Length: 558
Ligand SMILES: Cc1cc2nc3c(=O)[nH]c(=O)nc-3n(C[C@H](O)[C@H](O)[C@H](O)COP(=O)(O)OP(=O)(O)OC[C@H]3O[C@@H](n4cnc5c(N)ncnc54)[C@H](O)[C@@H]3O)c2cc1C
Ligand SMILES: *[C@@H]1O[C@H](CO)[C@@H](O)[C@H](O)[C@H]1NC(C)=O
Ligand SMILES: *[C@@H]1O[C@H](CO)[C@@H](O)[C@H](O)[C@H]1NC(C)=O
Ligand SMILES: *[C@@H]1O[C@H](CO)[C@@H](O)[C@H](O)[C@H]1NC(C)=O
Ligand SMILES: *[C@@H]1O[C@H](CO)[C@@H](O)[C@H](O)[C@H]1NC(C)=O
Ligand SMILES: *[C@@H]1O[C@H](CO)[C@@H](O)[C@H](O)[C@H]1NC(C)=O
Ligand SMILES: *[C@@H]1O[C@H](CO)[C@@H](O)[C@H](O)[C@H]1NC(C)=O
Image (cartoon, rainbow, N blue to C red; front, side, top):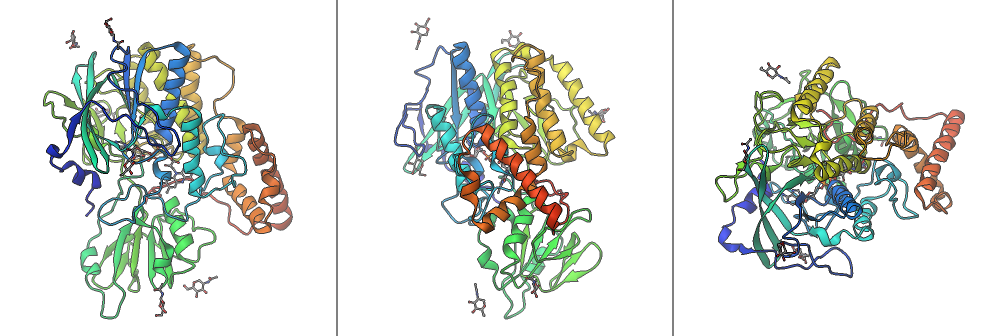
């Protein structure tokens, strides 16, 4: 049903792409300056070359970390980040066009998107949002944050926007070789095909781009059988969701209890005729949404949506599938024009392979394996530092985690002996998968989700950074990487949201934000707000049920 925009793109005749050696070197972030890009001609003698794919939170984190390390150690590295869109920011950069299904939009971002976590928890350590930013800001602030980081850290000269990495194949063996990368540059009129080779490839392509769309029997029949005078029926994935007003005269069924599904019911239920929310049995209803809960969908008939308990609805007009995303890296599964270069990733949803039997990197659309600590490919085709990933973990505060991961990747690129042997790393991974099974999870189903929520997510970051400290790569300050105030702020996300809503309704935002500039001051604000709200709720009670929902769970495990 979904036709990937990228796929359409890849079918364009290559003849229309001018082969070039990165001749166009103008940079186009939203700035007044233009920069010259690092390119082949500048760094031909570089000791290492590194390509990064994606300029969202994760790509910017690894770029900043590599550039910092290179400056500190005076390394001669050639670093290039390719971003297919017009600017940095990833999911936070709005799509200028309205979605036109089945073509995928550039981002799931919708106009009323606000963060569901307090922004001080969404920062790179030491780099705060601008003074005056509301605690749960609308998406524009998060977009601006990414632009600010790039400008203040002087990163724009490394970033090639409008450059889509189309394919990347490994030319070499398990010890030496290069990535052969083909990049399509598309800046309106100017199109070109760039071919380059790199020692290291770092994938930061995000995980909210390829919708997971469950197939239900009878849905085509249901779609085409609206009675005369009835509204046109529709079923679409939440990646296409934009404007709640469109549902004013409709009855809506939202499917899935992750962040996207909960946001959709909150926005749609005040305007829709009626809103149903289909949830797995163990999911909590969304506080503040006027919905009727229904179980999981079983199938459709020409008249009805039928649920797993046998009940059915025949008044639904719109079905919004907030059913999460698939973990794909299309450019690693596509051949390059060099037939001797090998694919970096086997893309197979129904594979029986596992971390010990796979002879290449594999994605089953939920899990990329075998990877050490969600970071380095253990594929025997190339050395472990050849291919790494930033930002794969889900249910985690991204930016801090992206930096923790980037520290490990940058050190390993500087000195591969930072890492244990491939055998040791594979053994670590198998142990980790076993531990998940012991807790009742299928590692090949949960994939990169931090299933224990923030406790697991923070333990993960602390562990990988401690690994660097223990091996002498970073100074050991004896502290956990995740600061205590971040822990509190994530734990108390919902309490903090209630606090902030109370402040908004009394119009006191400015009073609270006054003089809050540094990271310490934001941390202090968080702690003060937690106390302030707890005291109030002790006196006045909290009408909302105790929340057991993870603050950020895009998939909802539907
Ligand atoms: C609607 C929505 C709301 C969210 N709200 C929150 C929140 O409130 N709090 C929170 O903590 N997290 C939230 N998240 C999680 C969000 O995923 C992270 O905040 C983070 O921004 C993800 O960054 P990323 O760099 O991993 O991925 P992305 O932001 O997806 O960036 C990936 C980048 O890679 C580029 N790219 C991909 N393929 C290629 C290619 N082949 N060639 C070149 N470039 C390529 C893409 O264009 C994109 O710019 C939200 C996510 C979504 C979708
Ligand atoms: C690269 O190294 C060679 C040999 O040492 C030298 O002649 C050449 O000028 C160098 N090129 C650059 C761009 O530094
Ligand atoms: C990999 O290729 C290099 C250079 O061609 C060669 O020297 C080396 O022996 C090869 N290693 C393996 C494990 O095949
Ligand atoms: C990127 O492409 C858009 C058109 O899609 C164009 O407006 C913009 O100027 C381009 N930016 C750069 C830096 O080439
Ligand atoms: C909803 O229906 C009413 C009555 O038919 C109509 O007046 C109104 O314009 C409709 N609203 C939208 C957003 O379609
Ligand atoms: C909730 O929605 C129903 C219609 O489904 C409506 O009758 C009722 O007034 C709504 N309640 C609130 C509090 O909005
Ligand atoms: C992978 O599968 C093989 C064969 O089914 C099995 O022996 C092995 O224990 C599995 N390994 C892991 C890590 O699951």
